[in-house]
Amino acid sequence: KAGVTQTPRYLIKTRGQQVTLSCSPISGHRSVSWYQQTPGQGLQFLFEYFSETQRNKGNFPGRFSGRQFSNSRSEMNVSTLELGDSALYLCASSTGQGYDGELFFGEGSRLTVL
Amino acid sequence: GNSVTQMEGPVTLSEEAFLTINCTYTATGYPSLFWYVQYPGEGLQLLLKATKADDKGSNKGFEATYRKETTSFHLEKGSVQVSDSAVYFCALSVHNQGGKLIFGQGTELSVKP
Image 1 (cartoon, rainbow over the protein chains, first blue to last red):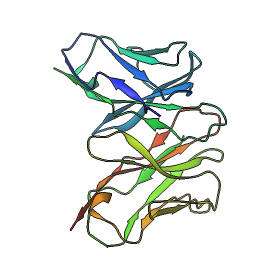
Image 2: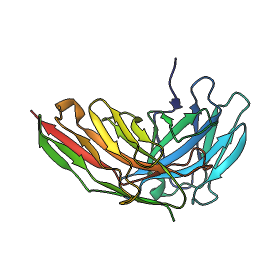
Image 3: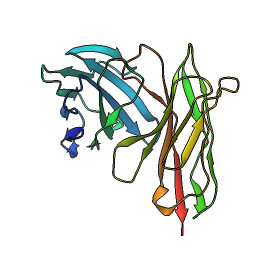
Image 4: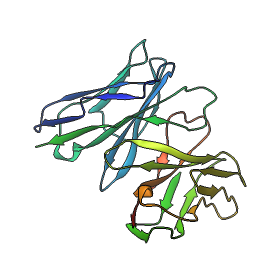
């Protein structure tokens, strides 16, 4: 079956702009999590959505937001971009039930902020 | 708070050498432990996992044992191959935390022929 799909794969924005990233989970998976990966901070948890509700949230400012649709697809949005937001944004899906931490990751969206 | 510490890289080995990547954790409660691998240009893949103390996870020749007494989950492989070159991440999840994994910093492994 198809894996986790993230779009776009690469994008370049300038400071102050906003960006929306999309994630389509594995069919049947109801949980979608987002992570930010940078060389300095490593992999950091942003938030998780399950059945259209935010279930967990990391320690990121309110400029980072997300949502999940009824078909489990998810989007994350970053407003008022800063240079430090340049990163690889990874989406991961899971069944979200009987959960033991196994996540299936997409290839990521690489954001460059100029 | 919950955290994961793993040995810094990069680690460079010759093919067929023995590999150990150290990982220790701090957690409240009883976490599940994972090793994920990231090949160049790809997303993370689950390599192995252990959900309770003394469990041994294994996959593709890699092994790790959940040691509660030393709060460790070291990754080992008896004979590495060039194709094992990747970044390895140790991670934990805490029960009822859903899709929230806490990752170590990652260890880059480079295997030379």
